Image (tube, rainbow, N blue to C red; front, side, top):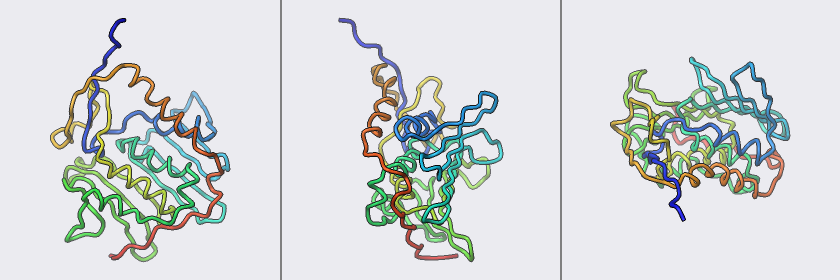
Length: 256
């Protein structure tokens, strides 16, 4: 029996420096496991997916001046909310949000504190700002309120210069707490992310800070990883996304 084909892969840590990755890790589970409908248009380089209850719409498309990922939720028994993610936001972190959105069990649990996964991972409170910052100082999450403004935002940057920004995420203040926690839990996860080794698509301006380890994996394991993920989500019980009334995130301890 011949040895299985082996491919070189890169393990990248911390995960918020791994770059965007394959968008199918977000779109395929929504479409194939959770019955979100697609609106294909071969003449437009966009992906549009709509939830079965028609209340949530995910749009993915190239935008040189804004976020590539936008998800809006409207109607029903809750206030409208929206989230957006920059193109270099790792898809595994975005999937933490969308997996929570499509899991009916998460909405039925007590309202979580979105900061808690970060605290457990050793993220630190700043002396001159609100929110929590990763131990390496490169990633930051904050619940910002001022006047009529209420939102969560996250950013990863290697410097304060505009060129140092890696990615940014925005989550409106009415976004249910369990969904924001799905995002922060995926963000705080210490497990490295798997990326193609050649060419390595980790953003150039983070390669000094990122820890990259080249590993060999069976080609079949890499090829079918997404299929296994889709199958795992398909095995969850299926209920309408908006059936329970989600709870809004708890208020921040400080305001500006």
